[in-house]
Image (cartoon, rainbow, N blue to C red; front, side, top):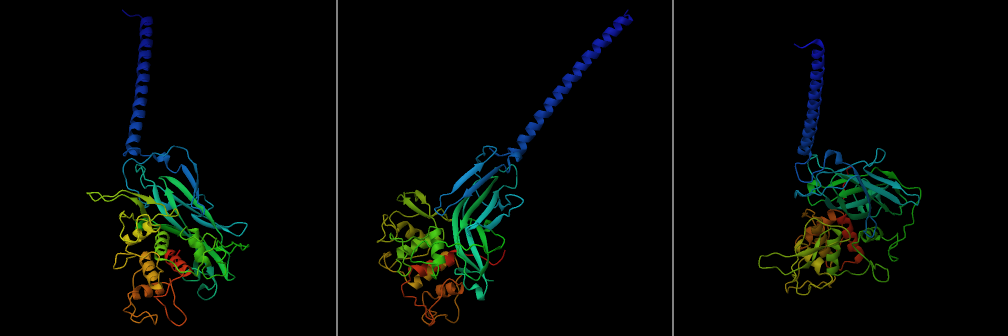
Length: 444
């Protein structure tokens, strides 16, 4: 028989045992739940090796400040170490978007510095659409066009590439954009431009030029009134002053690293230009990459090459250059060899029947029109009536000259002559190349 005291003691013991079982069960349930959540998290965010989690997004700010010497300074503020892409996913800029760096600043902005120069910024983010996409670092060339609006007929007074409604591109800066995945990158620099008297407002266009043109991005800033201070902006070359018709174009190409002057600091815009020099200018202006160090082709038809940087600006097609070259007077150690070969592979130039290129021959106005129109990728036109008296419809340069003229890239002489066989000067070639390589549109 069990008395009341014993029953009470057993009841307490059973209660303690039951409580212990309940506590153990609760602990096991908690552990299983945490383990399941962790496993679920790995499945959602690590479908590819090294995939970042959703919490990792947008935790970087990178500010890149390029200089006119194309030596960018980069400061990075981050909260984690970025995970490299190990999936082999090809890089495109289809994920790249313009973003506001803060609620009070536009994606692409322009403002006046106290000294009258202009400060521009452009902010982009390379964020894949899905959190389980590791993304990839995009490297692509960018172009920043300073556009000035002038009052009067066709914006007269603003010397540069005219785009309608009085807007004219007067300066261009170029560089290479590096956009790591899930990072916000701000590019910034300054323009110095001495305003003509009839200029009333200014803007910039930031354009990212991708090898996949359907993914290229561009955006204009808001219009900004002319700064209260008109900066003096001393000329880069003493023989190309602010009142020169070539001042803007020569300054713009020089700033982009496309052209340079002589040892005495001058540019000599009236001197003729060699064929080899033209090849170099066109390759640099249009961002055509070159391969400078190439071994002879093996039996398998392959070649090893190293890319040459061109003023910090890279194009979208790699060119395989045969070490033996294509012209008997342009050996591999020639100063213009790489540029001539790159232009040849793009179909921009050819040589003479004897296999020579004659790099030190003066280039003619007709030859310049053909090369620049091809480099710009303009659609050829063939008007029924010639625009110049000395360029008939059966001229080998007819379509190129008419196309360039229709696009505002070149003009003729007051007597309605073009003089296609006349030598082209350094200033003329700078202007034609600048106008053709600095495209813009009239839309926002």
